[in-house]
Image (tube, rainbow, N blue to C red; front, side):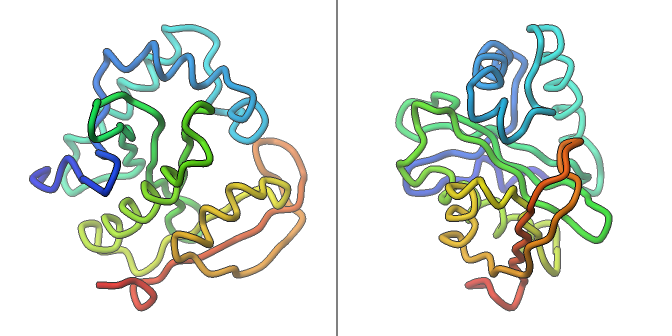
Length: 179
């Protein structure tokens, strides 16, 4: 079932996590942008980061492919882990999530990873659509979704990461992809 991995793009390789990624995941979780936009993915110590990775790794062996399904985002040339991208169940469908380390932001890597993961979700997981849900104030993340072919649905005031805020919702549907 995993014959489609790793997924290569122009600059990246989307690959399964391994436990030796723990120190890098912990370090990225401490960055300002993670603390601000994805506080539930900020880890207090290496044990907490490793426990999260163990859970994500355990999901790879589920049959059929199960959610959450989160892959490491690595530079293709060096194999350096620079972030993650994944699909998770939400109340009314599936959501894409992503983060790229601060040192690598602004280079198009997030869009490249989101495009690849959303195509994987539609082709391999046979999803009819994927949602993108971000804080309206996270302008860079909104641009990633738009650049990746997601269409704006609405903007509402609701709970996100235990805090009420303005949220933008996007969607990428099977009929909007290049497949």
